[in-house]
Length: 531
Image (cartoon, rainbow, N blue to C red):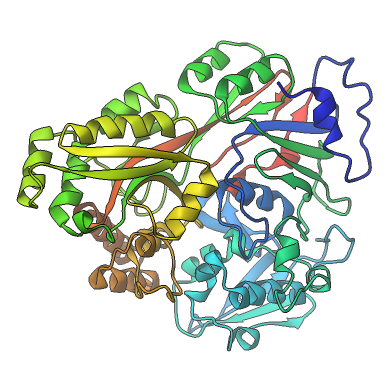
């Protein structure tokens, strides 16, 4: 159990909040929002590098972007730092008009020069999420000319080639589009890294909060941006790494935390029965899937990939392991995203799966390893998959690991099978479609090192179709293309799509206003109130 004394002691890096009376109190301190969840996925807080779930949510509270998904209609974008924008007749130039009241944590007003620098920096650093911007045609050689500030509050973005405007805006709404303070970042430049080493453990934004402290697999502490124009009800947010759902529930009951994020179905039922607790839920723009690395000879055979898809007990896993927390999803576009196709084409069919293995020349099966996150529900799902595949002759050795370990391994393309989760980077179907299907260069020098690349999936037809769909201006035709690509992926891709997470957060006594949504941007710490 994490003591109140230990929790307060971690927050000494900034001016102390009034916490002396916490030991005598029956609840977490006034003005401090305490959240418990699994946070071992964090790798870096630099928006130009950040590409994981937890740090994405925290960055969403520490930075402005030009635009964000509309919380009332996630199929639209809404103003954030930009109050409005104009698009040229040919669609190649977008002029953003920025608000004048946004201020960084240093007190400096955010300018178009900061915005231009932030986007240029992401392209020049070329870390993992840079593809979200570089796919539009920007590169190290042209970005400073094509993304520029023309006045202190005017940013002009010139596209090297035409794209659907909605697609461009959604790209800019991703974490990589966060606006950093140029002066602060460049003051910490080390050997031309544009402040990347420094930014991995800090923030330099104009959001409601700023990062104060991060200890890997332990805690994250954010304090209020004293110059933010956003009304904030809690001056500090403390997020603790508590991987055990039972421990999270006990902390909620003892009022050692205000919000618990990873309760199991059984604990969620218990929480709903407690009149002091409030449960909020929402379907996430994420999908849990099995990746089959095609560097492994067995997975180069389409029949083997299909055999695995027909071997899985999708409904049984959803019903018995993840009730109330996940639903079956057999497409790379989960329900709620534009273009998502309904239906479940696969079901557990052991005889069919065995026949497909025999057709591929593996009537006696084979052995394989499965990497997975060492946390609920992945542990139990992995064991179910192990049993499902054993029934068709595939002997699976489970390799559990911390989230960042599994992610690092799959990014290095050294996995065989991996049980993973992927969340959309922006609310446009291109995000997930590109991730799972586009691989124009399978070499180690590729500029697009996402999911298809990580599992060596090369399909020239689908790669070309991904780009064509992103440029299609006719919405009906565009959505039809995404439906076609989802059907093709179910048949050809080395991915078995299994589940869509339903995120739930449980608020303790007197806590209100915590919201979960399909993307991290919807979770605003500033709106949470404590009685």
